[in-house]
View (cartoon, one colour):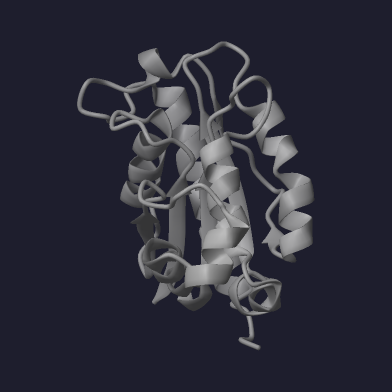
Length: 189
């Protein structure tokens, strides 16, 4: 079984990016599962907290889930033409201490998708993740792209994709990304 951890970069209960991850989970190929994780309980990064108390429990738990996974799928909103602060904060915590970065992230097949109610999509947010992913040493997947604009019309009230074109683009992306992850299961340090 191939396991991919999915993280939505929004804390909103009705997050379009969480809906996008759930839709991705529904179309994962046989033998591949998407384990959707939450960043809701991760506090703002504070080096004093880290020095005095170590990593908060929600950070430790998510780190171990990612370290044990075969891949990572990030669903990112776009805030002010860039990545959301809450998701960047979560990755800042997950990269602590720096000596853990290879164990958690190095060569981890990683994909980035996104949804927004705006018309511009999440292309700038997705691009703003590239320097961060490079520092973490992940293995990014560039063979597909899911950029959902006008998300309020793409998802229904129950969070299902109702736009056939968006659903098809997501299915194609998920199949390609899942195959990429399965082919590149990393060797653990």
